[in-house]
Image (cartoon, rainbow, N blue to C red; front, side):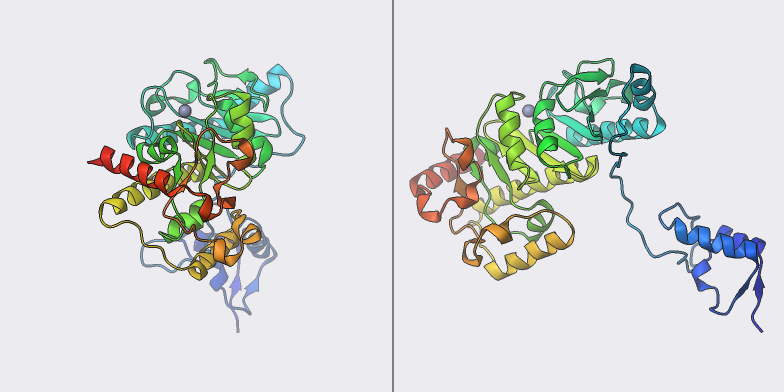
Length: 359
Ligand SMILES: [Zn+2]
């Protein structure tokens, strides 16, 4: 005969880190015990007590932690009092902490120097947390973080917001999936941006999957409406954008995700740079790239390449794509340029320039 489980039995199991899912199929439950099972099924993403080591724990199927901030559409705080309350609420304070942590990471990686770089997180239809101007990103505290609307007007915070927030807002206005942006000047990726070069495809699988194709925005004065418009338009197709003669901006679903794109971009550019010293890059085949792009799509990350390009065009045929300056904004996306349009002498010149700097 099957055992009767009371609410106390189940609570004991949970406290010991045991799995409620392992109850026998024909287990008899008291009404209160049934309520507990129902509650557990309803909050599968909630925190569970840690299982004692060696004990099997499978109350729920494994769940990825998700730091994406979701707000109620149309529910932005409006009055000064509401904004103040929201700005200092525990959930917003937690995001400010995360912004500061990412600031420490970009600074300690050497991605920013002086007061360079900036970070934003969207927290409403028309509300965005952002880092202030003239501050080292490695030494911020939550009290330094500001809040702006999507037009860049500051609505909360004691320090003035960064002027470059407009570029972040350009991205957020164009791409609703962009809930956070990180801008920095990591040395290798910025060197590519200064040389006007984007790295080729078909070299390393991870950047193809987690980064997608790197975009390229022609030079505009940082923080200007022109810069915001160009970068914003590119954000629909690219999660990482090299800004010519300036640096890199990446977007993601949360601040860590955006930061990862920055790491991916700079590591990719660094690897390509070093590869040039030991014989130059060798590409893998087109059909393999297609597999990676499909994988990226499966993970829910946007990729325009399958729709826009024929299979034969997926891999850049040349070693590098060179963006000649000045560029009209319509040409900012380099993938549409056929190989024959790339000036080989210019490619060589830029390769030589990078090699010379390295030696
Ligand atoms: Zn900058």
